Length: 348
Image (cartoon, rainbow, N blue to C red; front, side):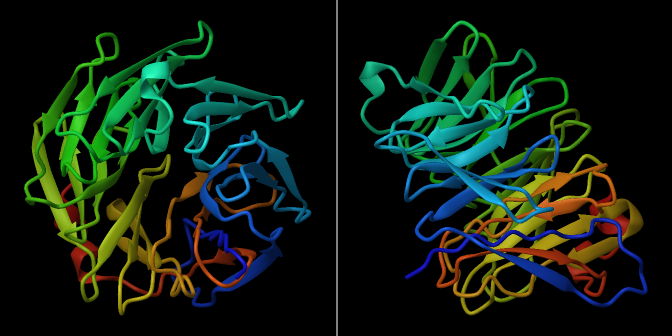
């Protein structure tokens, strides 16, 4: 079976009269089993090749795909592009944080402390305002690495197993969510202490979290099928149910213009990404199907801006399936689900 990385490029600001969706496919090397994706400062697309322990880099203009080995036991899951412009990986196999130099391809590995070896089920990462990278591990930990000093600290998470998504806010704060623990947490950047915030829906399965430009936290709730938002300023919550029968909200992401993007997986509904423009009352269905994907990162989405002769593009990855492609498409605003069809509904 060939593995699949599907990369969705969705036009974030589209003409209301446009109704066609265009796609472009890129063939991937066999067996990479890609998981998360991130877009670099010049438009290159990095992906975590979990099965073969590689960092993949796609040049969307030429279609060229470069693969860089991360180590003998590597199995990267998450990837983000740091403030230095380099890709940073949470590596499940090495139980380590890994950086790749985009120019020299040099790989730097920071293993977790000995008492946390050999396995913490590392998941995702985010940078704080001081250039330190924070990360989660589903076995019940979260941690912080200072790359300059090489210092790493790891803490036990509230309620044990479950830490999953993590995000940094514009003012440099760090928040994470727990899938098994069903909570949102804010960490003290110096002591590492975590303060738990309870979403309104019990046992909602908070899976991924992303901050918008005002520091509000947008959360994908896997168990409930909701997208929720928490405002730390007034300590308020809002939530919306995704359309469809038994939706499973996998991921959420907010672009620099505060458009929200969520993803759904579930049966019998196909997987799709949902692009929201609350201030203009627009919502876009970004992809109709993720082929055979049931357990996937359907919209681990990153938007790029300002590339020459290119529209802003969002990329999503799927780590299961029978095909072995990258797909890039253009989206038309042709679908407006009721939960997101008016500014008044979101009241932002």
